[in-house]
Amino acid sequence: MIAETVCSAVSVAGLGIAAVTAYRKRFLAAARLAAYSLVPLGLVMTGAVEWVVDTAFSPTAWAGFGVLGAAWLMFMGTRAVERRSGGTRKERRAAKAAQREAVAPAASAPSLGQGTRTAPVAQPAQPKPKAGTGDDFSDIEAILKKHGI
Image (cartoon, rainbow, N blue to C red; front, top):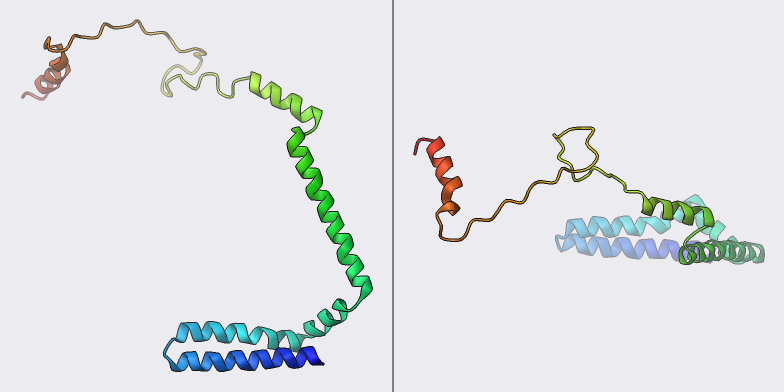
């Protein structure tokens, strides 16, 4: 009975603050405050507050929360140990085998090239032209000649 009264008082106070906020022409904030203020009233009307009060003072409910907490700690502990140790033996073997095999052995091959080629073809090394010999601009001259310039 006390919890319902407190929730109702909180709702009325929140709606009052929302009204003052709306009077100051901050309508968006006032609507948000009104929405938050109606939540406790809705919980009282649905009976959720009574259920929470009955649960809060029940030793059986607290024992249940303790069991749930212990189960959660066990799950998190096993996950931490599994991450630290690297998983099971089977998972470690699969990880080592995956490291040995390449994911995409022909990944460096051109995408429009031959589909059956397994290794890239080695290109012969071309000598680099020396700076200032005029060969630096030969490709530019070829482009200009192609366009008639």
